[in-house]
Length: 317
Image (cartoon, rainbow, N blue to C red; front, side, top):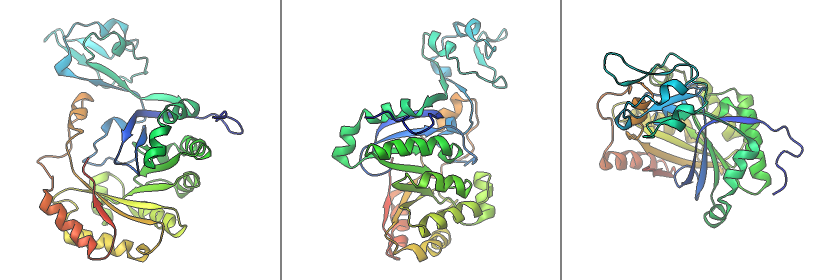
């Protein structure tokens, strides 16, 4: 490829992870770049390591041998061996600086550091490695998070490079951002995977920590400006699975049903894949009980939506 920095500022992105061979977040085989930092605090978040825009220590207690090798190498004193229990402890109120000395020296791989600064060129090199799979499957790159729209300049630059090099682009977003940020990335985005979590703004605030007026306005703007949008609905029993809630979503989307750029609805059943991550970050998991929906319940919700001739699909990760 040509130099991606030609004619542009070489920006940097703060990312939490890069995942290859994804089949769920956009068409075909995709590479997902997870941007770090999110303004929402969804109670069911499966990627808690992406919430904070800072370095974080992930600690697997079950793997730790309490050898203490990490204690002297940490320059800020995050790690210590308890005098009372002789167990390794992580002091969470000290900010990690991302040096990775602790994870490098840990003999049991019990420690990892989340958060990495990557230039646009570095990210593109990783993305381009799997171009053959994109070409064969109609895939490409998806930027997710966290919330990618918290870093709109970096996201737009990366998407622009990918578009110039013929790689399909998508972003997965909560939609909670300034409209200027949304439009900044929209120019280089082939598909928006746009979350609708709850139509009632007060309930949305209770579940996510933010109201939904800005989100719904941004969604309307994207659809009316003819950008390609697929709706994604995380589904949790007793939270947003009622027929009244589904009908509210349908009513909101009905004016856009026949738009060519409206690409339908993905239903995302609740799962517990992220629970262990909370433990490793020293966080409490916000949801008690199990709000999973069984296959019959998912089929029923799918049928409600199909009654209105909306394209709809259940996505089981």
